[in-house]
Length: 168
Image (cartoon, rainbow, N blue to C red; front, side, top):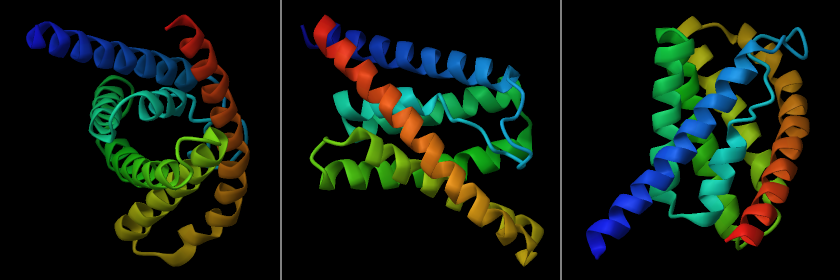
């Protein structure tokens, strides 16, 4: 019986990963919202938030890492993998911490912190790679965008979670 449960669990996580990868792929086809390098909505994070609210942190990290690796191999390049990994891991840690503090409520706040820390992680890797403080000039713009996009993806995840809860 446990084997069936494990297989079902892995299948569900694989479906979440596939959905996140598909959303990422569609978003990569959209034109940039603003002329800020790397600025995106981060719609695949909706899936990360859903998994974080429904499953263990370990499961969420697995889905996130699988999506980052697959999207880098499918849509990106080696350098984008570094930025995505650093941003994604910082985002995950922030969302996991905020989710724990807020006891799984206020998903949009969790998302905002995730978006902020995603950008901080990407600025950190940019600082390490370029060794120039000039990249910090993007930080104020990225943080403002993170608040807006984090709120949007958090609200999307909130309503999606309500719909999924109603289906379960």
